[in-house]
Image (cartoon, rainbow, N blue to C red; front, side, top):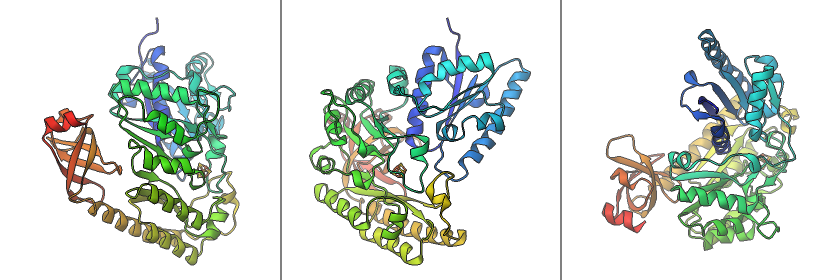
Length: 458
Ligand code: SF4
């Protein structure tokens, strides 16, 4: 029988990495590994890395320096600690990681987590194990599902990966290189996973993928299902009250998906739809394959379908060749749409991408100044969107205790955190809340009905 060992996983980056980290610990559970919250007492340390942000690889190497010291301390006490690097940096750097950081025992690419038990055994036997292939078999067919206890421990909301990889090749992005070509999971596998989550008390599921609305997984009849069809199917799973999906590409906002926002009450009225720039010249240089007018058309059809839709986006400022006029076009697009929030970043070249080879890079000081102006505009819109919620009453799904005693925190349909003075027995329930106050990032409210009624009515 396998003895108990402890695994510590540190996740960097997006929700897909958080999901992958959970699936790694689920896969290691039958091998006798239990999750620990601290690296200090772990027998296996996994860094699940992200390559989206600037200097991602350098940050991983610096974190590995800290992990090597923990490994040395453990060795001085006759305890063997294994260090694994997973995720997009592992995929991009491969064996180079072991060369630069010999304390690393395992390098595992994002499509190979199901091989972790074998890689651990190989590293224990041979010293190192590296696997960054793009395998022909689907990791999801082999990754263990979470136990009921693990699902319960993770709360009432869950992420489920339905799609991975990307074929779009935006010129700033490494995803097509680190995650490979677009693939979608079969609908019945996703449905079975969502049913298990619902059975463990999860009531909100967010479907995730690098390009989630390009989903085209096989349906039970063997024919490809669209994301809309999948959502419609999952909305019928008993116990699932709320559905969301992220991240989407404007080109893949199909008519049936737009209609689903009108027809499916479980599909929440919030959409993250990155546009990156408001200038057609820059959108073409980014190889986004759509124009500003295409994006505005999608937004207008979405709002026709669901008038209260809250919209968010990603923006990159200072892409090579961006002029003041191009940037002004981004600001005017923000003005035209009115976002409930958005993420904005300065462009920084990613090795291996076409954008990194462009010669007309924008000066850092110019990027910083433009980012400052854009963030000011977005913050203003977010504050306005939140202010508009005061005195309104809507359903909140309570997820966890708040920072102060007697307070619990949930999410509005528009994904804003909502803090309410209410009994903790409401965690996991949906209750009607009237918003009384707002700050830039949060809403504060009061239960619109007595707790007993609210809980019964959820
Ligand atoms: S669509 Fe998204 S994931 Fe795909 S290349 Fe463009 S930015 Fe990257």
